[in-house]
Amino acid sequence: MSAMSTGLSYFDELRDNPEVIDPPQMEDAMDVAEHVHDPAQNALKSNVLATSSVRDLLECPVCLNAMYPPIHQCSNGHTLCSGCKPRVHNRCPTCRHELGNIRCLALEKVAASLELPCKYQSYGCVGIFPYYSKLKHESQCVFRPYNCPYAGSECTVIGDIPYLVAHLKDGHKVDMHSGSTFNHRYVKSNPHEVENATWMLTVFSCFGQYFCLHFEAFQLGMAPVYIAFLRFMGDDDEAKNYSYSLEVGGNGRKMTWQGVPRSIRDSHRKVRDSFDGLIIQRNMALFFSGGDRKELKLRVTGRIWKEQ
Ligand SMILES: [Zn+2]
Ligand SMILES: [Zn+2]
Ligand SMILES: [Zn+2]
Ligand SMILES: [Zn+2]
Image (cartoon, rainbow, N blue to C red; front, top):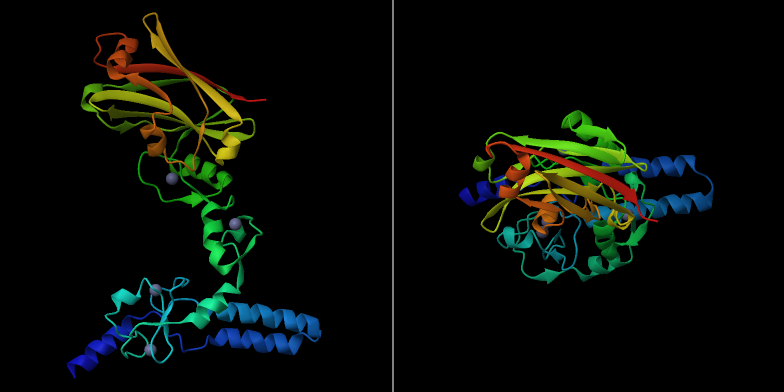
């Protein structure tokens, strides 16, 4: 009795039952048969339907992700992905029979014959890929959305560049500047208390592109330092077409940096940790700030240009 009830509650946890055929799809199939009389069209439509039902077969009934080899099955033929198999305690989540160690080679082979559109189709990718190489393409697809480049908090927003520019403006209230030269002040009243800090991002638009200027405080080994660097809102191969310079100074001293903006595909943390920017020791930064070294007042000037 108790085994029965735990079995039922386990079953209730399942989000889908793979034996139930999706009724709306069957209706679609009948609609097609009724309204399309051209036999070639008919064949095409039924191919599309066959592909989508094979796709359904390749969806793991537990986690709902696409399954990749090894695909497992119970002795009744219910399938399961290799990620979920260790978590079901050797019980088929569909029929509760012992799962054993049976691989579903037939389904793995059917999957190999399947060709599917890239999942970033709605972002503009028109690629169609064999089932097993689709994931690799998607990890590198140039249409895949970008992460929000804002560094202050962990923001989970993703999108294409125009969407992210609007999001930075409206969601994060970042400073937006147009033009390829800039002159920016970074001020902090208690710089000695701050070991890790991120200043408000600034976004520049020039050459029909967008660039993010970052300024952060962090520890380089034992030394407290500041870093300023530029990121390009786009892919790396295009970022390489641009260069930028940064300059900071005071009291008759000056430091300059010339670099290549990094793509926002690289996280701001990755860029920071590779020291790919203008790094200023805190002592020097406070010296540049003038006054009594109690306050940080840095003026960073810079320029972005397009390489020929
Ligand atoms: Zn699964
Ligand atoms: Zn089963
Ligand atoms: Zn793609
Ligand atoms: Zn954001």
